[in-house]
Amino acid sequence: MEMKLFDSELKVMDALWKAGGDLPAGQIAKILKEETGWNRNTTYTVIKKCIAKGAVERRDPKFICHALVTRKQVQNYETGELIDKMFDGSKQKFFAAFLSDSDLTSEEVMQLKEMISGLSGREL
Image 1: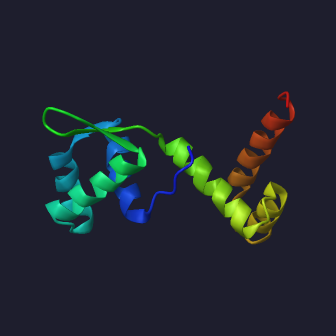
Image 2 (image 1 turned 90 degrees about the vertical axis):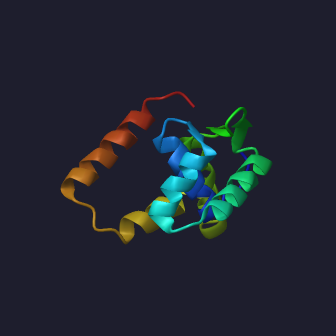
């Protein structure tokens, strides 16, 4: 996935992801009215932007919106962008900055150790 999604577009995507990937546009508008106060026109404009970017597919009848990208794909893209922009593309620098400035619980530290331990055994 090589696309930048803006905060407004992520709100639409979040509604779709929480619903399992498919929702009528009208239902997305109702959800975002409750969560953000957006009116129907604003929501439909953002949905159209997501469609134009290839993140959402419109299925007729009834303007069903289908997510074409997963939350994980967007997270991976955004993380890569952050690391490239702020840490010269170095994951090591990113983790060093994160670990030096975080208040991790002992449980979180153990979970991170387990994740790293699991990575060391995989083939590159």
